[in-house]
Image (cartoon, rainbow, N blue to C red; front, side, top):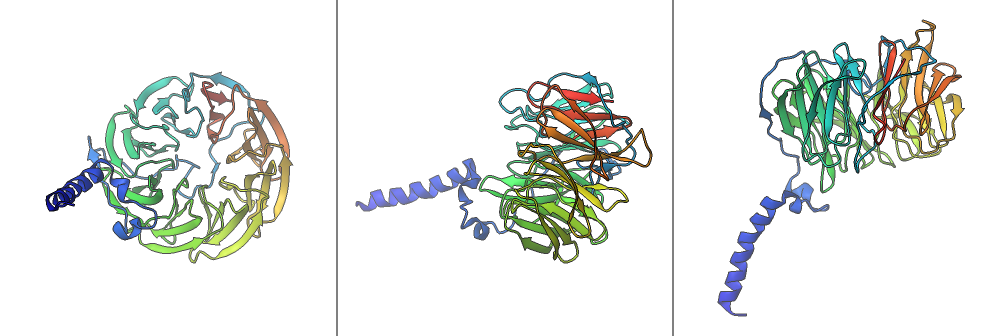
Length: 422
């Protein structure tokens, strides 16, 4: 080969390589090599549009609070709920599943959709404001978190957003990752989110609640993280699972790793925290209880199929409720993992978590609201597992019900909108 030609090819390669990287930085993220190239995820810069200081504390977020307990003590619907109102379509187009679950506080209802639209509604389902997230591809899969002045939501364009809860005005945006399918956690004065990268991998980031600036980013999780983080205050731990089958505990202040444990299946569900223990399901077909301080497994219960549901606690009864691939809604003994009761509904594809609330009918009773068929909601006695009521809905749902006052709100798939039960 002519020396001039060879030199030209070398120069061309030197020019082309950085251009390829600028066009697609994930070009370098080869599965077996990227840990050496970029051993730690970079901190993404936020864009601050308007600074609004708020409490940075929330009991209105996915699975209710920072411990992700899944029960609502202050909500008191009756067992025999009926459809009060059925409002406009939320999930339409090619991405039509209702992955984003609604949340509600005294200011209204907040819910996202697979179309990329995010809404605030009043308690009758009337639109207060709307916010569109462009370039989100699969839209909004996670559920919002709300504090006294702001609402936080992630989208599949990889950004985490903070909006003014009264006006819907954009306050800040941070490109945390390539995709966000998890729900934000508001705890310890910050906002935490699981992010996914295209190569594929995952991370957890802590952001300043008021400015959106990244305060720390965890080490790589080894796989996508569909699991939303949970917070254990006593040990200062952020707990999260990943599709790598790893369970992580990160320090809430600096993101350093307390411990990590390897399991035999993907961990897609969000951990549930009670006392010194956390509970989670896995694609290894088991539900596990783990010591939060050490990561040691305390018990494992075989469910008969892989699971990604989060365990919902029943206050004061040492019971956690989940769904199984056997087509059961089941109550587990939190001490040893034994089945206390099962209600067979036959929906073996059921992978959706349960809501537990107080009861309007009986102050001593706890109600469990769960999908039991694609289009059917079942209401159970959460302590005994007795079926109290079931109701056919206008459409199916893959979201988790949320209650406020005496009403229950459910986001439905396709063009079936939001249903309000009372």
